[in-house]
Length: 349
Image (cartoon, rainbow, N blue to C red; front, side, top):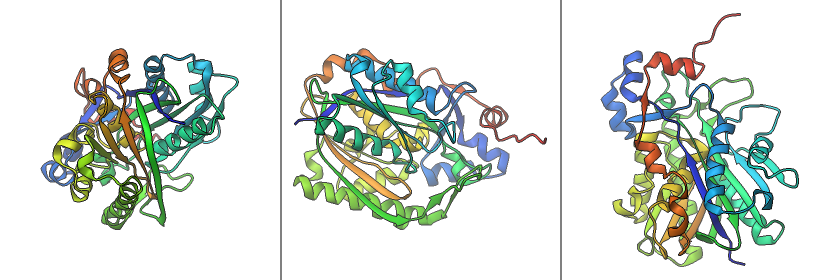
């Protein structure tokens, strides 16, 4: 059975904070952070925005592009490391808002930054098995970074949603792989307000070993080479890592830049590589192949090969494009406004 994406959507908050604004508060050199991370600004959720609200908006846009009855969605998976509730699912709220309840299977997924692609893997498999006709996978986060920590310069917010089906697909899923090891480079225990990380260890061996492992497995499985793809997208914890990973694997700047959002968006964690895929689908043409590898600390990567179909031209303009959301109608924040919105000012009891 040929399974693929029948609808996709993204949501990016309008609010932004520039790296220089953060650096000025902590007495840091903004230019060194911009050069070191290849980041310039990041998205910030508003007071009324969280993982659920962003997931609903992205999923509604995917539903518009899919053009299906929401009651045909048999599974809803929301991948995030910032679910609003410790005990209460995000997925049921999303399913209810879409009109997909009550005959639907819901699950909240966690796997650091690859919780979104984890949902895509499962949703596609359920459709392929014939268990459901359509399944929704969402990667969304309102990422956390401790004040003054390196993560504060990159931890951003956004959501990407994909509806999978076996007919009227806009991109077929031609292959998928997963590469997993126990590599603890980033973690947050219960009751910890902010995550911790292992500094440079998060790049080598964590990110690159895992990303290269999945990418090479995917190329070997398909018998394809980087030159066979029109686009490629990798997890984007900052602006440098995805470009370095792609170029070392043999992809070109031109293949990588369409899905490269992090310099102006930051790290949307579970939504990072899926968000890049939505930007690519906004531009891709029928017959284009897309190479995608996610990454999640802990550690693991999911890899996918997609081929765009003729239907893409009929649906791409049915919902807001990802780059338009990234570039238009921005609201820039001071550090004080940002700290208030992100709950960094902890009031005493």
